[in-house]
Image (cartoon, rainbow, N blue to C red):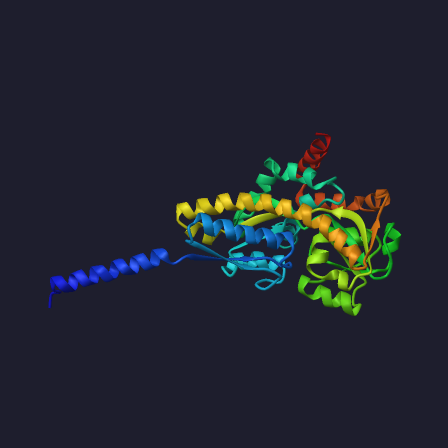
Length: 335
């Protein structure tokens, strides 16, 4: 039996209502961080949420999962983007280099960077852009370099660290990043790889003597509760890339991709601002909480001990790429 005009009209109306409802249903994107809500990675994630939802007039809904609620470490975060369980996040370059592509180890040359502004000059240039393109075969799209966790320093419950020999024999947790592991070995420590979610309890129970962390993560993840000494060795500053799962990004309509593009740039800028402020605040909070903060006045011995890592990095990334980054760092330092 052929449908009546009334039935046809009803079907068209229902179809229009369904289309309208579908158009109003927001696209949900999951944004993960592995650090506490007060960490600059997490505060800038909230900024991304606010801007993206406002600029898309509610067509994007950003669910922020801080403090390892969705993923426990950066390796799993990138794997989650490949699998579709994580949509957005920021990952430091050596975490990518340690598991997925060794070229990403190149910014993690010990003592290469004199300041945050120094490394930001380089990553915002062509070398940073070229490195970010290497995310594409990994199933992610890189947008920009935010801040990072900050300069990494050494926590210890054994003793303050003023020279590399003060680390001799100490069991120091390291992330799954070969440059950091090699550096700690050369300082005389016994590096123990350990995933982030296990570290606080290991420090509390004395399974490890210490670890190396920037001030922001030290405070945001409650380590002053279980740490006696914090020594400013400033041995590494790994930058973070804000990225999104390629499949998810490509599935969005052009206007929402534009919102993501613009919001990512603002988020990277916010991340840098938040990191600078949080770094200073964290140093002050550590002292208030009773942690002995040690200024290492002479880093020359640390730098000398770390020299073999330069060849290690060169072997991992290739001489041409290594030379380009070192030259760019030297040029940026002179400006």
